[in-house]
Length: 525
Image (cartoon, rainbow, N blue to C red; front, side, top):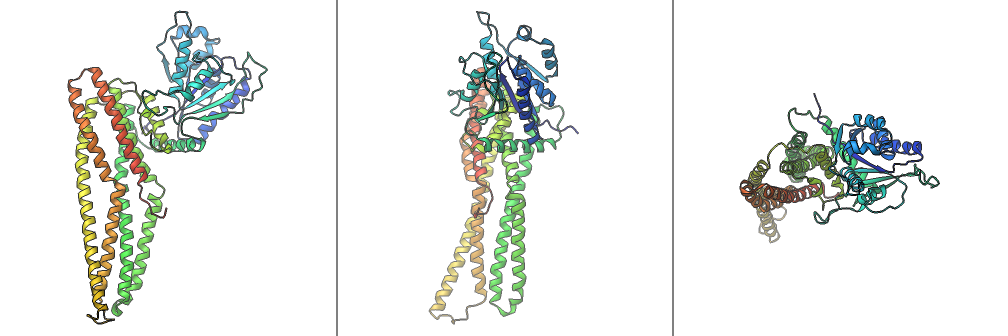
């Protein structure tokens, strides 16, 4: 069985060509990369490097020693780039080790220099990586000169305000390893004093929690059999979609079972009180109290094992989030859009969901193919929203009707009890001779209102009303898009699919936020 490829954590390197204390710096780089391998054993690492002299070569050699996958990014054609390399034999050896080689489309300026190409190279590596390793002497340099300082500042400060209001670097990290340069050998720097800068809203704790989530997801991916003949993008979509389709009904069934067990436990308790009021039924009371505690205990076990940890909800919510986002990524890829959904997805949601964007970013880097046309995606989404709007309406009608009936039964039962109590106070029925059968009316009133409350809680957790409203809002956009894709030119198709994808990502973000916040849990928590 061939397992599905796990999703890597991507490192990039930037640094000086004239590294002085080579062994000290190498030791720090080794320790840093080894710590990630040891802490996240299910997550492979990938290094992006240009194989330039000094820092690039140093970090790449460490990666090779640790068995880390290498992707080489060349700033321009190899023949010219080799003229800047001092040890071409070592360069070729590392290039042969690389699993992937990308050459950027950049040419020398009129003055014969490639400064802008080095800046473009550094920005490319920074954009594609989650973790940037900077071997830097921490001295400022001229802006956009392709140097280490310029790339570090780009990674910390750059985002496209015209594209979206959120920093696309949100969730990334820079590890700065103090590095003495040959041109300034007297500088007092200690390579072991690594500083880490967390970009955007993340800090060290939240960053590590996000990586824990990635590693846990990769552990699940390792168990999954790959399907031959499909693109990697489609394989991931099928995996996450399958996880969501399996866990969603299981989650709902367990939640209903837990609420039902609690409800029946309370019925047993109330029946015990009723039976205690009748001599001929007192012997049943002890059996009912055993049933009460047994049902509550089973409900507690279901909650503790399946609901409280959140794993079942996570598998359902987050797998669906990834599956739907991958479908949008597929549509963008199909139209030739060089856009990643990670730049537009879950931006306003809690930072604990950053790991989802990291996975999507890395999936897009690994595979930019597609498995269906953009029109197929739009058609399938249109049909999906149309069907789910009707499903939500049916579910709302069914559960609201049940809630209404439970409430009516409870209200009528309470009214009867109140009338009987008033008649007893007025001595219209004998005092102390409250008919035993009427005790069951008290029981029915409590149970009916209890299940009305449980039904209300179920509807709240499921969010049918909110989902229906969201689907009704986005559905007309897909209907209109189908028409435009059939008549528009290629540029028009790109615009339609891009805009529609962003709108769908907003809807998906809202869905994730809704269900992440509305988990089945006891109110006391």
